[in-house]
Length: 226
Ligand code: DX5
Image (tube, rainbow, N blue to C red):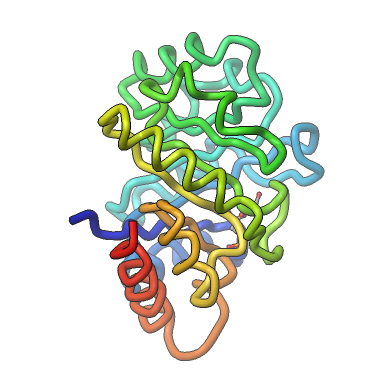
């Protein structure tokens, strides 16, 4: 029986206190931290580079994943791993030779993931699914936190779950965008097992630990159906 993995996006964090914020996330009980790397070209927003991630690395022992919402991700692959990321996720839409990019990430000793924008069909990665861990299905248009969850992505999540299970692949199926207590159950029922949340962790009722627990409980309940 799979258990839900909760990944915290730092996008809504106070960037003036990132070290403290990642410590707070670790204390609240998340499983991993996602660094939303944006270049102002692939998405209309600009966030941070590897030096910012490296500065936070010493504050926590949690795993870091770099979600590269950038053009030409091949240019800087080693930098994310050197900064302390154990997972590097590239967008299928951002590189011409996905198998090469994923192999280059693995050669650096990291797990290589692939992200799909909402308009990109699951079929875009069928031939590299065995090389993609995690497969990250965006449930918002990338670029900003606090957007509304796209329930229209659930058939794509279900198709990915069916393909992963049919082939018996050890690939985490992650969703990212608008994940909160009201939406995480539906994403889990569709087949997701890894859930990236930002706004729902930094804002909402109770403590951050309360919000982590509520998300985990709702995800586990939904996962019972897939
Ligand atoms: C979009 C970002 C967001 C972020 C989570 O590019 O990838 O999805 O991680 O943001 P929330 O949880 O606020 O939607």
